[in-house]
Image (tube, rainbow, N blue to C red):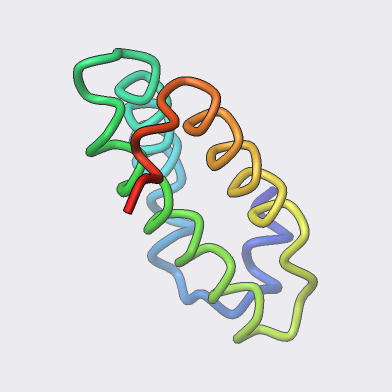
Length: 87
């Protein structure tokens, strides 16, 4: 994983703080599972995976894994609360 992140030209911040990145991702997933915080965390997950997609695109890598996780977040949020998508 460190080698792949090193290839993305993200600098040393992500590589040096990989545990922090993992903890933030785990907190987002945990908050997404709690019904009272699902709405706000859905937007946090969208932002997180959007940033991951942009890092992959900027480094000319295929952004397939973050896109898959983003689709899973959208589908699961819709299945849990369709009113979230009402305009």
